[in-house]
Image (cartoon, rainbow over all chains, first blue to last red):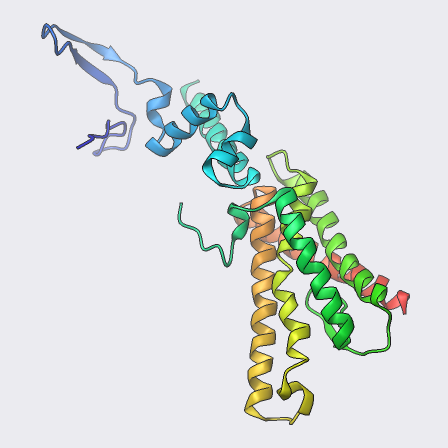
Length: 93
Length: 178
């Protein structure tokens, strides 16, 4: 079973942060306050889309062919992710 | 991504592919319209009258399609945040006209030939006619949604304004052709 990384607090809906990290090899534990990487804020589908986009060298035409979707559908999806990135950046500023 | 391709085939087909498929059905619709005397004066207005050459039916359909495409593209350029392509607007809106092929076919049915007012056969033909018109409008709506990447209010505004403007232009130009 693939466990999803929780990124939103179930109690107050705010962004979660990392407090503790552990090395499963030597069991060293680190405690602090770390921010989650921006990519982790996207859904699994969105993360896969970003990876596919990089794999296709940023070619939406190639992505559309691989995903068997039309060009504007893929472009619209990319624009949604861009809007989400911009919103996240604005919130962080 | 679950999508009903009957109402929104543009998730898979757009651009030049849609243009090619749409063009084939467009020509078939023009030919059937010519054979049955079906005039598409606007997107929602149809009349029946024969004795016109093939090119006249072709030009009628061309005006309705191109006027809508031009208005959708121009308004879309202002309202959409995406970089929209004219070939996507042209292709998806041409593909959206596919259900209109049913309209001239209805003219060939015995119910329409005999035209007995109030008969259930004629009423059934009418229902199919209205369903094909509604189907076309739904496809036009989704074509604008996908090709221009619009949602909610903006999508409704572009749909209503461009359909109305195209309707006015089409009716004016086609009536002047006569």
